[in-house]
Length: 270
Ligand code: A2P
Image 1 (tube, rainbow, N blue to C red):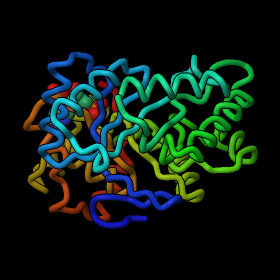
Image 2 (cartoon, helix red, strand yellow):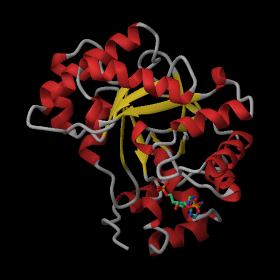
Image 3 (tube, protein in one colour):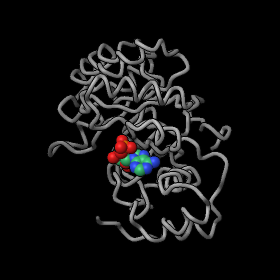
Image 4 (tube, rainbow, N blue to C red):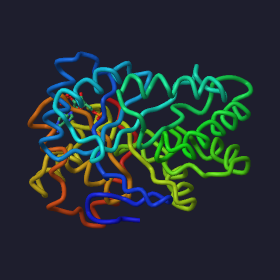
């Protein structure tokens, strides 16, 4: 699955950088500008957003402002629940492209599987629009987010092009192993939102111990752990030093024994 040490090859051949910049909750132009600039300088070539984050326009502005080469950037957005359905999806994606000021997305995801009683039909209908957008090359890859096995099982038998990615919550203490294994079996790449447990994992003793042992920050341990599980972490930070550190994880590896220790951590509540 690993194409080189910085990316994976999706099942349609597209290379996806194996660390992405998360952007949830960040909604100020000045902060986004600095974050995108610092991340690009640090080597990030993958940005993850969603229409629900309400920052697509700001991200588009920052990409323009710093003349970032669009062709070298992997840009993901997600379709919100209210926009599901064939026609609504097509319309919403036009808006996403307008906001991001681009004529294509590298990856488009269904943000959440459930909306209403007819969620199964709605996902299938939405997916038909995704397939059309993919065939028209308005999106280079299509996938889902927060889909558990039951949601994938309801979708896959009814569609032509399988999802290439599933973005789920994934961090130490919350591995969603069943979904992970199901996706690996179907050749669906898993991405991790909240790979740092949204800050909840920093007091954990096992992670503290490993941080000392490897001489890496706890965040770097978590990010490396994602990579060694073949999962794409999407850490978010607005701090320049942390942005740099979070992608500086290619010079060490976690032993199998220590990977198991992290795998076995119980759910971490702060
Ligand atoms: P900050 O923006 O101040 O760096 P997640 O990606 O799991 O949602 O976690 C994001 C949270 O973790 C943010 O609050 C972010 O704050 C913080 N964070 C990101 N990188 C690091 C790091 N290397 N060390 C400590 N906190 C971090």
